[in-house]
Amino acid sequence: MAGAFEGKRALILGVANKRSIAWAIAQVLAGGGAKLAFTYQGERIEKNVRDLAATVDTALVTACDVRSDEDIARVFSEVGAAFGGELDILVHSVAFAAAEDLEGRFTDTPRDRFWLAVDVSAYSLVACVRAAEPLLEKAGGGSVVTMTYLGGERAVPHYNVMGVAKATLDASVKYLAWELGEKNIRVNAISAGPVRTLAARSIAGFPTMEAIVEERAPLHRHVDADDVGAAAGYLLSDGAKNVTGTTLYVDSGYHAMGM
Ligand code: NAD
Ligand code: 0WE
Image 1: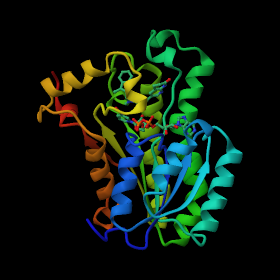
Image 2: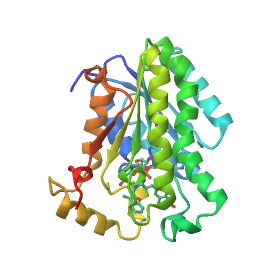
Image 3: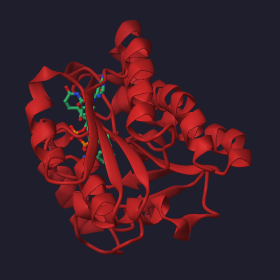
């Protein structure tokens, strides 16, 4: 796909390290000729992200905690300055729930941590798309991709409040797609099977989940971040110009099964 993103400008939220799904997507965009901007969550991962960004054509690396309206406003003003007031691509690859809520009973999720998961993992897409809208519009339209998981549609043991957050995210994708379609802004989700990233490796029983996919999915193999990167490359390219409001499953077909 060399050249597919020549002249395109992309903002990517959610790189933590080289295993991040966001980084796999960034590499596909960079390989196609895009100019990139990155946000990182805190000083703890700043160096990781700066080192990775330095290996591609990067215009901006800046901090963003998606819980903060001030951070989001500053980030999009910096992106506007870096990219001449325009943006073609927005990649949202951010999620968080308190670790204890991915271990205990969903029934026991307290109010504050329920809203934390929805705030970081779902509302952040709405806030970022709203802030990106003028930049995307000025570019004549654009493409937004977010990352979701089957646990937002079905009960996946232990995914718990993250499932509720993903259900909220999935519905948000459809409402955003409807409203922004008239501005030629497309909004889609990728539903990935379990991928060995930082967010996934800390989860007890993750190897078991990979093994279940390998046993039951039609393609009998687990999913890598690069597989997700390739799918994002499609959704973010002009080849998907009439695709919006949808979910592309990159899960070896697991979602199609009833057993
Ligand atoms: P990751 O840990 O590499 O990425 C998660 C990112 O979220 C990190 O960069 C982290 O800094 C960021 N983040 C968390 N809280 C934030 C906040 N308050 N403000 C800003 N950023 C914040 O893990 P990943 O697996 O690459 O996850 C990326 C996305 O993919 C998530 O939405 C996740 O739900 C989704 N996803 C992951 C899998 C999987 O198995 N790994 C499967 C399907 C979907
Ligand atoms: O979306 C995710 C994981 C997102 C995530 C991961 C963590 C780990 C560290 C959100 N918040 C946190 N909080 C932490 O403190 N996935 C799709 C991967 C995943 O997570 C699971 C899964 C799968 C798959 C949790 C339980 C069951 C299945």
